Image 1 (cartoon, one colour):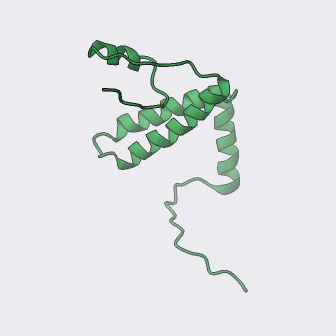
Image 2: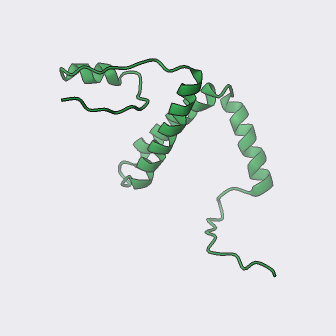
Length: 109
């Protein structure tokens, strides 16, 4: 029986699949498709983190971090460069330390 995934996977996943006697068919993505695949994977991993139990959350957040680090490199950036952009944005718009949840806005007429 064939199961179709059509998604980016970690480097060792095909080997792990093969250890179970199954055959994984893969292809190597070009630069644009790799970045697109990483961004899709980032959403997938973020959704898994959101649904995770407290026990599973560290592993799910580690997956988010792994994908984010790969996406930064694939986008031609450095981790230090990303942190600098984050710091600049935090200085302009703030962070999340105040735990603010915006319920609604009454617009001026």
